[in-house]
Length: 285
Ligand code: AMP
Ligand code: FE
Ligand code: FE
Ligand code: ZN
Image (cartoon, rainbow, N blue to C red; front, side, top):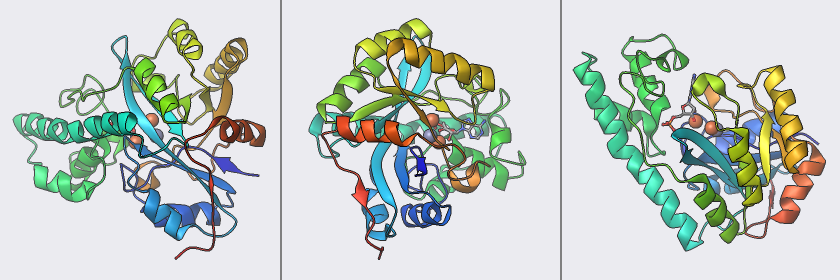
């Protein structure tokens, strides 16, 4: 069983449509794929309609959170997408991404870059708008060669010249909301140091006590020593350990299934969830 529990589509900042994502996941030999777009569940319908036989879809989202002045991402799986409290918070965060992206465009204009909101809006094409869309505009304008090259102090990295914060949920509130919607919480790439400061182990211990289910350990942004440390932390705190690609299509170089999750951990996630069931593929539309 090959299980990839963290993937993005055009519903946020990936480049595969939800239908393309599930077809590519099947072609990559995956048995289970999770759709975890930033702050939205909008890709579910299309992914389910296109789901190939033999591939199971885990519905989810990656929630933008902030604690101790550190931005972090919380993967939420198999929650009820209609549950009103979590839905309201998700929409608040997603909608705040629009004025925030517009503010980043204004910063870039002040820095002499002729990017426009219309350009970014076209690139985002209705998905949860984020820095990767702004970065794609910078690539189109020839300001930087690749999306990754826009994530520097000079441009869009945390604290960078054109960076603007967005509304982000307190992770303890996120855990409460996800649990209330029957979902399971996994702290995404907790040691991704190149993205900025990371959350302390003491804080992660508090999250574990508050109901956090697991941490993502095998991820491209984690070096071998960070993975070893996180595995030890998970053992101490009795947390599940996941691995996943964090696939973004052509906006990142990582391939679907580059990192995977143990089938026993996947089984435990599905047993804990009460908000939704994994969806078995029936052949697709
Ligand atoms: P935002 O949610 O708008 O703040 O943007 C964060 C997103 O930017 C992450 O989810 C990644 O998809 C992307 N990102 C962060 N760092 C990098 C990087 N170094 N290279 C490419 N994409 C990145
Ligand atoms: Fe992303
Ligand atoms: Fe993330
Ligand atoms: Zn992600």
